[in-house]
Amino acid sequence: MNAGPEDHKALDQLRQAAGRTGIALAGGVVRRSSSRFCLGVEHGDYNGTELFGVGTDRFIWLACRPNDTGHIRLFSANFPQDGIVDFALGQVPDPQSPQIASSWARFAMGVDYILHREGFTLRRGIDGIIYGNIPGGGMSRSASLTLNLILSVLEANGIEPPDPLKIVDMAQAVENVYIGSPCGQLDQTMILFAKAGMGTHYDPKTRRIEYIPLGDGALDFRIVVLDTGTDRPGLEKSTYAVRRAECEQFTRQLAQAGYPVSCLADVREDGLFEAIQKQFAASHLDHFARLLYIYHAQRRFYQMLEAWKTGDIETVGRIFRTDGIGLRDEYRISGPELETMCDIARTVEGVLGERMLGGGDKGASGALVRAEAVADLQRAVDTGYPRSCPAYADKYALHICKMVDGIAVLKGVLN
Image (cartoon, rainbow, N blue to C red; front, side):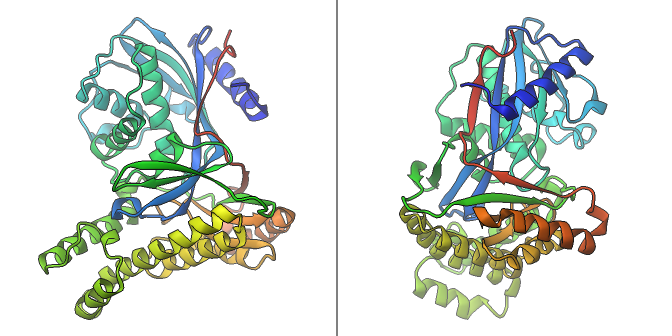
C-alpha cells in the first residue's frame, strides 16, 4: 500500500535510527501493525463472550530485511537506551526469565521461542528497526508488536503464514507462555483481522469472523483515545491477572455446584442467572459482581451490534458508557486517572460515551464523540485533567483515531 503522512514521519524515525545504529535497511520492507479499539465486550475474551472492535491508526512500524547470520538484530527507536537487541535463532532465555522481565526484547525472544515450539524451521534472521506511536496502555501495543514480529520473521524465512487464527494463537502464546501475561485473544484478533471502515465480530465458540460495516446515515463521529500519561505494568503485574483468576475460580465453583458452565459467558438465560444469584450473590459478593458485569455486557453486546449495523452511533455510545460504569463498579478493573478522564468527558456535550480501555488500572480511556465536539473535549481535558492529576500534567494526550486495516506492508520505501 502507499505510505501516508504518518507513515512518512515514521519512516524518518526509522531511517534516523538506522543511521545511528548502522543497521542496513536498503531493500527491506516496512510492516505496519495497528492498535485496536474494543467496543465490546471488554474483558470478555477470557470469559468466553463474543467480541467486536476496530483497528485504529496508531501503529508500530517494523523496517527489516532478512540476514544470513542466524541472528535477530533489532533496535527500538522508542527505547534507544536498550541498544541493539541481538540473539541467535533458537537460543533465547527460558520463558518468564527475570533478566528480561522489564525489556521490550522479551517479545522478540518470545516470538522466536513460540515459532520454534510450533515446529517452524527458521534459518534466516532479520535486521530491523522498530518505531511506534501507540500509547502505553489500552490500545494493545504488545499484541501489535508481537503480530508484526511473527509475520516479519515468517516472511524472512519464506514461510507462508498459516491460517490467521493460528497466528492469533501463536501471538497469544508469546504473551501467555513466554512473557507470563494472562491475556486473552481480543487484542490479537481485533488487530490482525481489522479492515478500514469495518467492525470485526468474533465468535470464540465457532472461531468465526464477520465484518460489519457501520450502517448508512451514522452521524459524523470520532474515536478518541484519552491517554492518561500513566505507565501501565504488564498484565501479569496488574489487576487484570487478579480478575481473570477470580472469573476462572468462580467458573470452577459453579461447575462443581452442578451448573452447566465452562466460562462465565455460558450464563445467558434468566433462569440460570437467577439460580446462581440466589445461591452465590451473598456468599461470593466479589465473584458474583464479575459475573453480573459479564451477564449484562453480553446482553448489551447484541444491542450494540444491531445499532452499529443501522448506523445508530448514539446507541453504540450509550452502551459504551454503560459498559464503562459496569467495568468501574462491578468488574472493578478501572483506575483513578482512567475515571478522571471519563468524568471529564462525560461533562462535554457531544460526547456519546466513554470508558476505560484495555487491561485496567492505568493507561488510556476512550470516547465516541460527535465530530463537532472534539475541540470542546480537548479543552475540557486540558483544563480539568492537569488540575485533578498534576503528576501527569505534561504526559497525557488525546488521540483522534480512524478505523484502519490492521496489517499493511509498505513496499519500495527503503530503496
